[in-house]
Length: 323
Image (cartoon, rainbow, N blue to C red):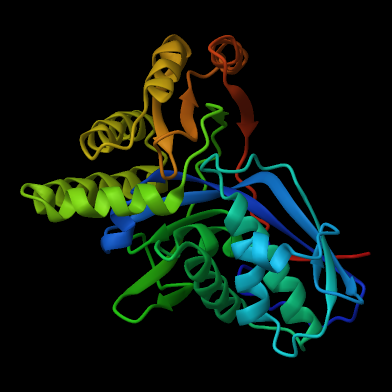
């Protein structure tokens, strides 16, 4: 495994940076309120190419600062001299699918900007990426950005050992730790229903503030805590049971969707467990295949109208690419 704390070195234009996407296993939404979350970086990536330019443009759009909140936030918070640059972004991650497309873009462009400004330590990169993504969305946690910066399996507010780093906002702190990769194959499937992370987060926050909300949050906390431990020890049966429990809780807070439920039903004969992953209300599902039934699982999800991917965790977080 690469050193997850290796800094982003200084570099000069033209330069390129790449970041993986992510997949949340346990704890989405509850992490915003301080509960644990487990996610892993996936081998679907976003890559940016950055050069000096006559105007500030993203993918040849001279009005990108107005059109793209993530690009605008990255320039405002990550590019100190504001001199014109041209950025081209190429991504294999479906947008608005719950697989970290925005976090990957933010991490890749922030790594590139940081390299051009003398380099950055990885914990500082993780903090900067969180601030940029939160600035664009207005809400959220550092789970996505820390996962794509670190690579591999990452626990927020849980897990063994000392933190890789801590992320701070005005009113909260999240500790980020490494969790061992159990070496399993996973399948994700995009439903084709785009979703808004910010809208879903606000909806769940309102539900958790309503009567019964604190009890629901405590259930999310227990499932994620137990899930992190089960993944760390490679207990596949326990992980499957906890994935199913997590999905029940996500239904309870209102972020499932009829399309997601149809995909869960279609996948069931070939999967040990299936749940939504990410903000929900659309987006994607995550499945732990029955060993030997990966191909059947892919076919079932495709026949149900989804765009499925076999994904493997990648240990390589955001960083520069030789150009």
